[in-house]
Length: 122
Image (cartoon, rainbow, N blue to C red):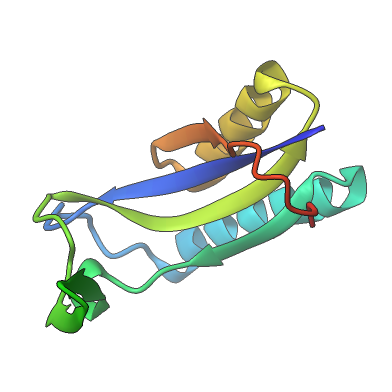
């Protein structure tokens, strides 16, 4: 079994109407149901929502000196808004889960396998 990162992307400055309370409730119900399905199937490893890119700090090293600057690392309109780390038998299974995330969040999802590191998997 391999692990995959399902990253949820957002577009900075994208104007979206504020959802009505019932729409937000429906959204949360879809996400909670999806996460419960992932848990029940043994797929879910970890997930989280991230603050906007302007909350980031970039740490660099140059000639042994550490420097820190306000982020983001790359100026881009698109950024990772959240993510899931999942266990899946293969890419096809990971893509099927990504489709479920798209249906729950209505956001684009990037699927990337983790490279083998020789470390113990979670």
